[in-house]
Length: 348
Ligand SMILES: [Fe+2]
Image (tube, rainbow, N blue to C red; front, top):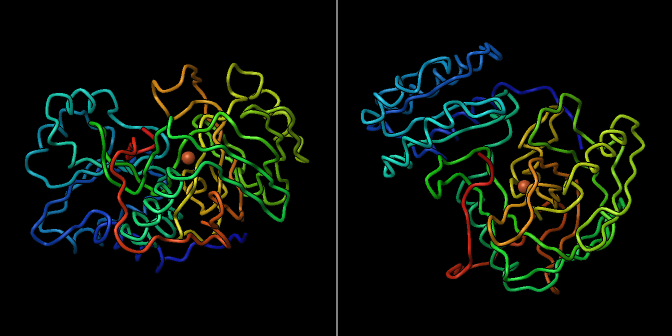
């Protein structure tokens, strides 16, 4: 794991990849962007406007202090509308209501979280098609396997039972079920109520609530013992994180695994030092503690979600290694996912 200074050329390439590859922009299309009004990284807005304008016939923008009415009035004039967000969704309820009434417009809307230079430096380096292919390989193999074993040099040694009782999440930037598509990509995720062994979180943590501390764990890994997907022991050499975990696990159901996640963004270069979905996309295992991802397939819930992200694991489905050295084994040829219950986004 390394930390580095943001490279502006890489940021520009990332913006170009976002508009060209992920959004499929072209000079006969029109794009509308909604930027954070907090004036964070204002230079980034200039870069996006500069690059975006070269990709589209028409490129317009506004800041997110505007009313939703201002957006709903222009939907019909644009091919795509992107909300650039920090960690919270702008116009969340209003947009949901609008999409209930105008379901075909859902394909126009995208939300991109983790507004930062690091987002563009890292998130869009791997092609959307590459990530789709990795996700589909993981989901196909996972659906057809009964055990996932995960090991690492730092001490992770887990056995995760896989079951066709549970569905999969496939996140690579497409929409599903009436919600905007979500970026940054990418991961495949499922659920298991039989996770046993030791997880050493040596990558980072991510949370669905405000967390102002450096989330990276490289210098002070979290070690957690699980029995049937519940935390039975935990320790972290960092006193702040240890106290945080103690408090977190005392909340109802926050000590239960709600998500078995496989980050698949093979374009990431380093863990970022702020709360971010980018860290969760790291190509390795992460377990989400709290809020589960299975809707009505399971009978428990939680408001909070804490992801413990590993850095470098070997992941084996039945007898096949699917991940080693942060690189996934991709299935060649046609991958048939028919019949697998699947959602396309994993955060709102
Ligand atoms: Fe996840």
